[in-house]
Length: 143
Image (cartoon, rainbow, N blue to C red; front, side, top):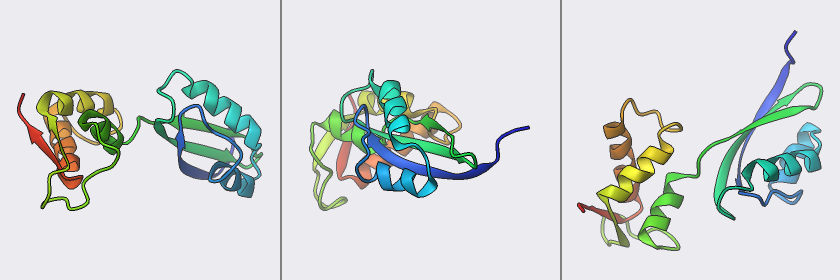
């Protein structure tokens, strides 16, 4: 018989940097999950990733207080800021251009994010990434 699911938690945690402080500790503590066990497992699973890359994680908590988790790829905004060499997106998207990204960079990001996007094909994924770039005040240029 399968374990009965008590709930799901969705968090963004820096790769290899999970610790019992907020937001991880309180979120897991409310469900009665062993916080240190999760932190060790998460850090081991993400230690090969770039340090401090935000990693979305979905934690499934079962009634017996055990858990499983799945990690996803970093948010599109993280990849776009990295490609454009920016610390943060534009303050006035649509009015002021904060930076530029090339179509090659957009395609590369779309390939990395394809498994987490709900796009049917690569062209749809590229359009989604272009839309995110535009919303961040980035200009997408050919080349």
